[in-house]
Amino acid sequence: MSPNLRKPGSVRSAALVNAEIRALWDRSGGRLSAVDEARYQGLLVEWAAAVGSAGDAGGADEEAGPGAGAFAVPPVAEAA
Image (cartoon, rainbow, N blue to C red; front, side):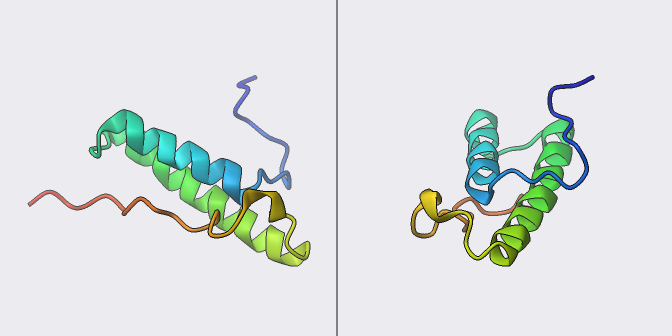
């Protein structure tokens, strides 16, 4: 079983997922391959779930610090 698979309903913190998104962008140099783009899209879904569950839990991501849930990396631009 892949170590990236989690039990249904388990959610990593938004800060942790955001850090993985930032690392993906850093490694890619700003241009995502098709494989990286698929990973990025999956991470966006996971991040949204984490943000939603943090709100339900009354701010469970407090250790992340101010603005930690916001993405600092722009979405992929379409090639001209």
